[in-house]
Image 1: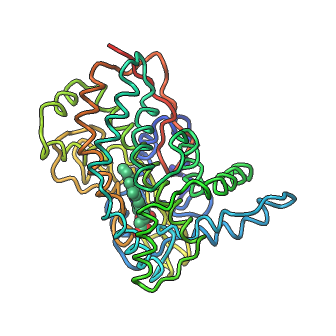
Image 2: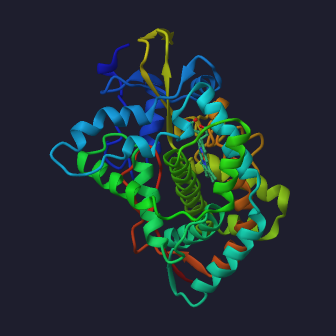
Image 3: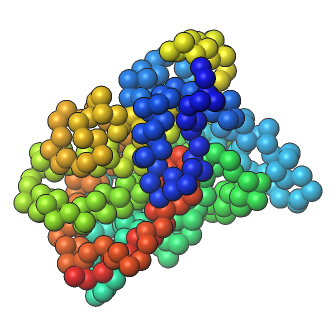
Length: 397
Ligand code: HEM
């Protein structure tokens, strides 16, 4: 491979955080599998990403043990209690083998016990009441507040007034998985992990986790349970509010999409919802590790390499999606990878779909009086793995 004469993936390319897709397109077209500057191998094409996700020859990298190796450096000369590796020890997306399989079963069964429809209905009433007299709205706040209302009921978060704190907690935890995180940010993430230890009630969800774990003879400690609670909130909150924000952003700037939502029913709405997952890809990358040396498109990849799978690029691959940079509301088929694939396929995919099914029409009906405020630039977070909007202003028409 001749990396010197070809484009090399660099998320710090100018304009990347505002719009990563031109850079991803160039990588996909000119150098679809290559070695990055930190010895990682990045995959951009749908076919490759999908094949690796679905293969049993690859493993997920272990976040908790990685953070454990970093803790002595991060907390050197501080009095802080290192908690990063403990906090992440039961995050299923970073576990392999039986430990992963068992935890996935426990969490999956506990998710099935949710009374989601009722929770969503109550949350929508509170949400629209809060914003009913607003002239301008920050769409990120609007979506975050809704997802917060749903999340705090599902997972039993103690303090109803803790919206801003939960938003920050979820975002900081999400950043523990991101790339190129400076020491100071790790320290901040650590203190949010410690802060979060007090926020959960003895909820139905927690009870169910213990119940299904007992049935499988799994002995989860209190620290394990907290780790499961933290990933549940982070996974449910972060991607869902990013997805909802980006979905509403696309809809509100296109009258045809507004009409589509308002005048169509379940089947057509479901197609649009899938299309918006594809288009936004809130989780833009995931990582796998190869146990053996492999050769891929004439590139030799040493054993134990980190393989970055760019879900965002795969979901815009023109070989799999016609006009991939357009939202086509009734796109079929739509085999997108926004929820991953294979053994680690998103455990919350059905929850996200259901959230969107129940909330999209009433939200668009409420927000149709508003338009994107072009005088206020949209602020995108400088995050690589998750595509996150920090603020997005809309105002009355
Ligand atoms: C639009 C919203 C969402 C998106 C785009 C999304 C995306 C993803 C992706 C791509 C993965 C696979 C990661 C990998 O293969 O390495 C994943 C895993 C996971 N997601 Fe989601 N997710 C969303 C919502 C949710 C929700 C609402 C929950 C919980 C209620 C959730 C819980 C999880 C869990 C527990 C895993 C780990 C599964 C495993 O490793 O076995 N997600 N998600």
